[in-house]
Structures are given as C-alpha cells and as structure tokens.
Length: 308
Ligand code: NAP
Figure (cartoon, rainbow, N blue to C red):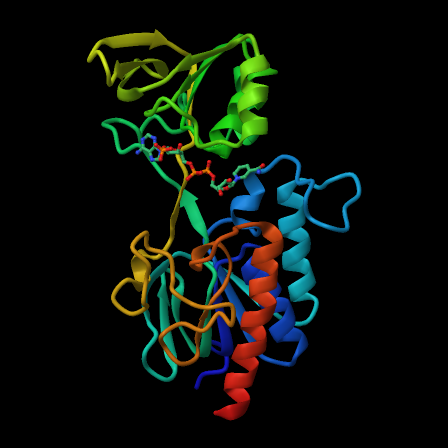
C-alpha cells in the first residue's frame, strides 16, 4: 500500500462520532484519516448553545466543540481530508474510498456520516435556501429580528425553533400537517404561552412565493381544502432528519428509513466496517450517544486489525 493514501482506519464524517473514533484509534497507534466535506462537528455546528454535553458548565457552542474534537484527535496523529466522497467499495480488502481529492485505501472503515435535514421537496426549495428558506433557526434566526416567519413541522425541533423565533421575530406561524403536535407536553405548553405564535394545524405547504428572496408561502388546509397565502420574510423547515447513506445503500444493510443497521457494538453486515453516531439505527440520537458510538467503533476496529 502507498503509505500516503492508505490507512489502518478511514473515518467517513467529521462529527462527534467520527472525531471520537479518530481520537481513540489514533491514541491506540492506528494510522487514521477522517474525511469530511465541511467543517468539523457535523450537525453540531448549527447549534448555537449546547447545554447537555457534560464538562461545559456554562454550555458550549457547537462550532467550538467540533473544532476541539478535531484538534483532540489530531493531537494523536489523526489526519483530516476536506473532500467530497464520491463512491466507496467496502466489501473488499483493502476498502476503497474515492473522493474528489483522490482515492484512499483502508483496512477498516467507520461510517459516521450523520443525518441531514429533511427537505419538503417543493419546487424552488433548493434555490431559495439562504434566501428566506432555512433549516436551522438557531443558526439563522437572528437575521429575522422583528420580521414575520414560519416554522414547518410538529416535532420537538419545530417546537424549539418556533419558541426561539418567537423571542426574536414579530410573528411566527407554526405549520403542521396534523391536528396534534408530536412535540412533548412541556414544549406544547410553552408554545401555547407565546402570544406571537399563530397555529396553522392540519396544513401543508404547497408553494413558495418569491422574487429575489422569499416573500411568502401558500398553505392548504387538509380539512377544508382552502388555500391561504402568508406573506413572510422567512420559513424554517424543521421536519426531521435523513441519514446520509445514499453511498452505502448497495453495500450496507439499512433500515426502512435508511439508517445503517448495526448493534451497540457498531458492527455492520460487512467485516471491518463499523457505523457510529446519528447514521446508525438506534433509539436516542444525541452528542453523548454519538461520542460513545465513536469510542466503541474504534475499539472494535482495533480488535479487527489485531485479529487480522
Ligand atoms: P421528528 O420528531 O421526527 O418530527 C418531525 C416532524 O415533522 C413531525 O411532526 C412530522 O409530522 C413532520 N414531518 C415529517 N415529514 C414531513 C413532511 N414531508 N411534511 C410536513 N411535515 C413533516 O423530528 P425532530 O423534531 O427533528 O426530532 C428528532 C428527534 O430529536 C426526536 O427524537 C426529538 O424528540 C429529538 N429532539 C429533542 C429535543 C429536546 O430538546 N428534547 C429537541 C429537538 C429534537 P408527523 O408528526 O405528522 O409525523
């Protein structure tokens, strides 16, 4: 193997799971490459204040925590490649990862590619991202101070987004496709107390209105069939997440929703391939559960290499 492009372990994804795996594996003496398309931290970078990651008594912003995790792994020799992964061959030995920055080989692979925001899939949605359409109120909410916005979704994320925006914006429409929210009781009660949140239940978004920027949305009431156009400065779509597993669908066993099927030992259906963090099928997706997965995956990758 060419030592510049071949590694004991390649970690796909530089979020908390990926960099924890890299830290543990590099510290155990493995040669490790982390491949990440954007900045370290994954979805965490979009959270302004994280209050449930132990060790930070006043909270920490997601971007800083991501950077710290990267530095912590690199301190022990892990390397980072900024690149887009184009294709993978995981069933062979060595495993092959093709990126827009070249081809890399690995004896073991940990897939920690996370889960991205689900999109509504409406016409013009992609071109309006950053022009009034957003997926992260904690990141972009401040741009809408004193303005009129909408949040689409009925889960805990949508509730948190609507509450955050209600403190910044003039009016917040909460648009949900059913007549009851999926969000927990505490969140529902907090929403009811906010007097600038306007509920639009049993309603779906049908279309975006825009010139250069978003100017409004058309919603449809599912009971009556009536449509209504809300004039808005911004809309935050908060309808859950989708695992980043398109590249693996012919090689790794996936759940119906597309998450990688691997147990608490993070072992996938392929020898030498492990899965850690939000991309793995599991009941509770948190930063702490992602870092836990990362440590476990590194442990089993090391064990696999020893047995080999
Ligand atoms: P979620 O719980 O899966 O909720 C997604 C919401 O979006 C649901 O209300 C769903 O409607 C709606 N939805 C899905 N696809 C849609 C579509 N195509 N069009 C319109 N609406 C659509 O996702 P989440 O809110 O992101 O939460 C994910 C996990 O993180 C959950 O376990 C949640 O509890 C957790 N979380 C916890 C906190 C906290 O502080 N405790 C904060 C945020 C998230 P239906 O209800 O009709 O399916």
